Length: 169
Length: 169
DNA sequence: GATATTTTGTTAGCAGGCTAACTAATTTAC
DNA sequence: GTAAATTAGTTAGCCTGCTAACAAAATATC
Image (cartoon, rainbow over all chains, first blue to last red; front, side, top):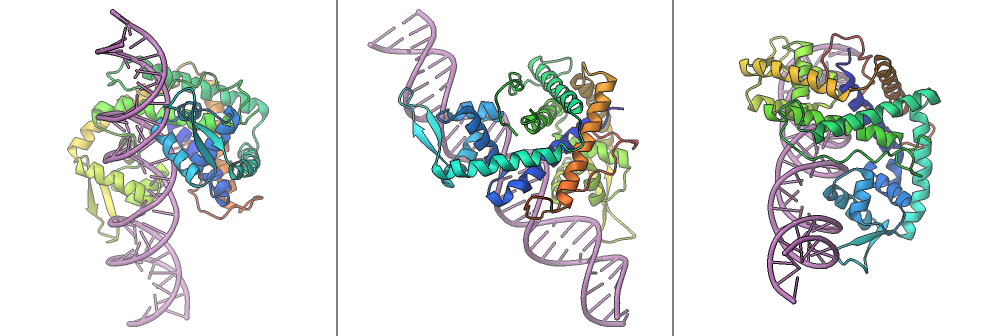
């Protein structure tokens, strides 16, 4: 039966998060923070807060808090945008750039440990299922559905996160 | 590259959670609550709070809060244990039993939507990878590891959640 | 050009994970 | 039998998701 598959998915994601968290711990970074740094690197400095939030897949207020913390730590800075006075663009400080290198190295090493024992085929198949799940979830929240589900908006399925240059998790 | 696979895993788990949450919404239950109910059903009434927490895979304080809410809602009740005065065992109220049936029906239907388009083989392979990930995560937190990771205890890998009677997620 | 809508950023506060630290009861060790 | 260690439950408070509601700026509509 598939009855525990959602539970298993949740546990796996949670464990992944916990493990990586431990790996980054002595850099003084929590998961939400190093993820923000990596995404900012990938997107390129100068993006707006909402662009970064969309790329990561979280809502603006969640993004905001993390960015405040990163700014307080002196790892990034926000600058006013000339074109659009509403926008605040994001930039690494020198300290942020320096730390980022370590973060990237940890991310690569941590990931390889977590994926240990999985063949390339398995990884590919795994990724395909995850994408299908995201697609199904997207459909389920878009259409009010066969069940009486009180509407609620959710983030769009991530564009096809596969073929971007990337450096996500 | 596998560089986005952790991100993808997190997104998938998060979307799954959100979708099921929406499905349960009009029952007045949040995810943590209906999960607790289903696990309690599976384990059988009369288990202790820590047993339930271990089965779900969360820590006691997290469990406690959810159980308080369920008790406040009149869905479960706690009774003192004769054998061990420290323990408080968990029982459904009549209202809890009644609601549980609806919850189970929703869980089954929601899951089938989320797994739509995935072959039995894919589901099996997917489950296998998730279990490998859990195993790897477990190893990574157990052994101080090749990286300088400041120790931190994590929940043990779930025994082999596969062949239990179950009704997890 | 004035008004309505959308977009960006923000604050406030809830949800549910977590650890740390504590009490009380039980068990283990002398 | 008494002291030490463990275990069940609890409280307090952090972290990071979320929604709701709002201001200010930009854009669209007329």
